[in-house]
Image (cartoon, rainbow over all chains, first blue to last red; front, side, top):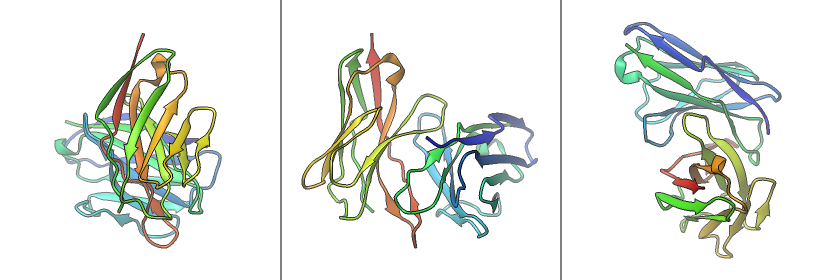
Amino acid sequence: GAVVSQHPSWVICKSGTSVKIECRSLDFQATTMFWYRQFPKQSLMLMATSNEGSKATYEQGVEKDKFLINHASLTLSTLTVTSAHPEDSSFYICSARDGGGNTEAFFGQGTRLTVV
Amino acid sequence: DAKTTQPPSMDCAEGRAANLPCNHSTISGNEYVYWYRQIHSQGPQYIIHGLKNNETNEMASLIITEDRKSSTLILPHATLRDTAVYYCIVRVRSGGSNYKLTFGKGTLLTVNP
């Protein structure tokens, strides 16, 4: 299957700082990327959908000013958690699809964010 | 949006077939059934998907009932490395040609030696 790479795999930051997570599709062009958040022992919760060159579409209850998503190229999307707080500590996962309605989405390995 | 129902957990003996059921009784005619799995602290891994015909690949088989209201994922010879949470997902259209995957709670499959 196609490869999606996230960076970093884990990060620890201080409260009030911002953290950027990168999601790259390594062997295909990702017209659509998705960002999920997962708390311990819970399922993945979709945060937003981004299409290359367009503004992201956020799910209800997700603050777009806090979770900034940029999808400037067909191989890279970034999620920036601004002014992070301990409650933002979570496992963040991206997935990417190469376009067309019938293709599966491939997931990155996830980023463990800990805000102290 | 079609919802899915899965048992919260299942056990399987190593080397035996693991049969994971999923109910999606409100599925629409143009919605696909996808299966992913997530091993602890990793991103989900795509397994298989189908519309109405049974599907098979190198990882698993997907059996969809004729009325499409339920499906079963079959791992023919489960190994310890197949221990994971398995998610059955009905692909939801999210405007235009975009589709998004909404995860439920899944089934924790534990393969025992």
